[in-house]
Each structure stands twice: as structure tokens, then as C-alpha cells.
Figure (tube, rainbow, N blue to C red):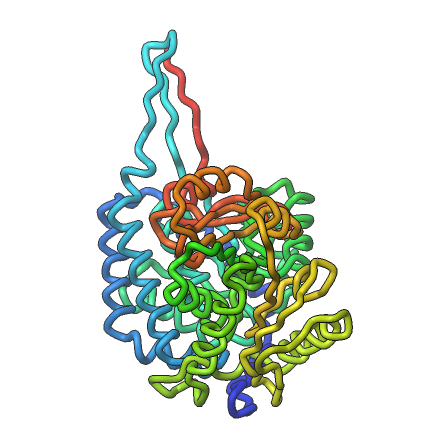
Length: 450
């Protein structure tokens, strides 16, 4: 049984039965059948549908955003921004997929030799709840434009979002079964991966989920792409624009109630500006508007589930026992967790070592650049790092030293359809978005004509 609970009211909003194994097989067979025709459609046909989908999202942004807010408590303004970003990724691939997948001619001894990029077939996406539309659309848009078809196994607490996405595609005219929601629990994912018509799988989620899916895909000799947890650092040097840097750091940590893999979770501040930075940080965090997630000016509301807030509380309390000091906030009331600033954080504490999926910011001092690099790289994760400085030479020296999948300078780490997105180490492998993302699930076919 898949249940959805409104985290703000604690009311049950749905209770759905999982579909049976026979129904899963039927949907996969239907996907394979439509793939045979979808793969032969022109880029113009696919792009036309994708642009219609983008327009549909923009026209219905408020209604679709309300589903997100009801299911996970995300403030409505941020939910609307999520829908608008989904429209953007549809437009991006509608406009760029044909060029990204064009034949690559290579000069050899042959009369003609080239690489063509052809769709693989049915691709399974296992997606999380924290960005219930965006996570899906950044898979959906490139893969449908590449000629693949999609199956979605969404998180159990965002099934209304999953159904809404499927309905959006139906309403704008995508072929039946081109993209389908599999209303199943995690226990049935392996069945889908093993099916002969499922050619690959992508997952965004926890380390544990990634290990399970990667193992199952490996056993079935099928490609997988994983985007897992993150423990991003925000590295603040003493020559930064202080007020602007604080504003960016606050957004990086506390948007979506802190529930983002690429959130800035570890704040590293250079000694010489530490006190001034903390003072401005406290002021800006106190100014964040807390309230009902449907409030248009609300920035902080409830976390998606009470058990997630309890887990965050445990990480915080254990760190305090080890010597961390709560400077602001940190109280929990059911699924609501006060925005929290924690000082004296050292590398052996849970809030430094582990991913904290909620509004807690772990703060550590450093004195020199090499110390900052060691702190950044001293994480098992490698999704992204933000560096704040006006020193161009320092930046150019530091960028090659970071082990993460992305380095953002004077900006928070964020996903952008034009840029590849993904991590290293325990943050997963493979890339989404840009031309790198659309090439993950295609057959790169070598052709040699003597």
C-alpha cells in the first residue's frame, strides 16, 4: 500500500494499492510496443510534443505546484519555480536534442565511417520525493527526445505527482504508454529491472537505494546511472562579498526546507571574517519567513515526513554530545524543524560526515586554503562545492584540487539543463542534463563502410 500524508496537517491524502507483477509486465510490454514506433518519429515530431508539454506546464504551474506542496510541504513559491524549471528542460531538449544526437563522422581508411546515436528502448527511472516533478523531467525530456520510452517508479509519498506527470503527457498528445507510472513499492523494482525489455535504469536517491539498484542492474548486465547523496561544502574566504555571500549560503542550505542533495550542508569560514560572517548569517536566517506552505511569502515550512525530522534531530543531538554548539534554532515539532546553525563542528561529527537532509547548517573554521581543500575532500560524498572569493588566481589554483563533480564560484550548486550534473565517490556515477545526459542511454553505434 502506498500512502501519502500531508506533512503540515498530518492528514492522509491518499492510499493506493501497488499494482501486481502481472500489471507491471503488461506496462513494460506496452512500453516496448510503443517504442517500436516512437523510435522512428522525427525530431520535429518529438520537439513539437515537448514544446506543447512545456507550455502545458507553464499554463498549469500553480495547480501542479499545489500537488507538490500538499504532498511534501514545500513552500508554494518554490513549488511553482520547480514546475517552471521542468518547462525549461523540455524547451532545452526540444531545441537541442537533434544536434546533440547528430551523426559523428570520423576519418579512417574506410570510404565512410561514423558513429550514430540510437535509442536503447525502455528506460526505468527510480525517483525521490524531494523534487517530485523536476527529478522526473530531467530524465523524461532527454530520453523521450532521444527516442527512448520511460517507466517511472516514484517515491511512495508523491504518487499524486507521479500521476499528474503521466497525465500531462497524455493531455498534450504523447503516444499512449510512451511514459508510464509504475505504482509499485521498492520491493518490486528488481522485477522491472530484470524484465528483458527494460534496457537500463537511472536512480536518484539514497546510498542504500543506489547500492540495491546498481547491484540489480549489474546482475542483469544493464547500464545504470546513479545520483545519490551529497554533503556539499560552502567555502567562504575573507575577500568575499560578505552580505551577498551570506544570502547565497542561506539559500543554498534552506531552500526546500533543506531537503536537497546539492544543498550547502557544511559551511567553512575563514578565521579572519568568522565573527562578522556569523553575525550577518544569524540576521538573515532569522528573517526567513516560516509558516503554512501555501503562504506565498513562506520560505520555511515543514519537512516532508516526521520520521525525516526525527532522523535529523538525532544527527544534531549526537553532534552536540561530541562538542558541537547550537547557535540558532534546532527545535523540532512533529515534521517542523527550526532552521539551525551549529558551530564548533569537527570532522568526526555526524553533521559533518553524513548527509543532513533538512535545515541544519554545520559550521567549521579554517585558516588557510589548503586546510579548506582538505575539509572539502574529507567527505565520502562528491556532488559539488561552492567557493566564495574575489581572487581569480586562488580559484584557478583550487578548482583542480576539489574531488567533486561540480565547482561553483560565488554561487550555490544548482542543476541547469545546459550543464552536466552528477557526482563522484559515494554521490554516484554518470551524468544527467546537457549533451552528456542525453548520451547516457543511447547506443553509440560504430559504422565502417569499406
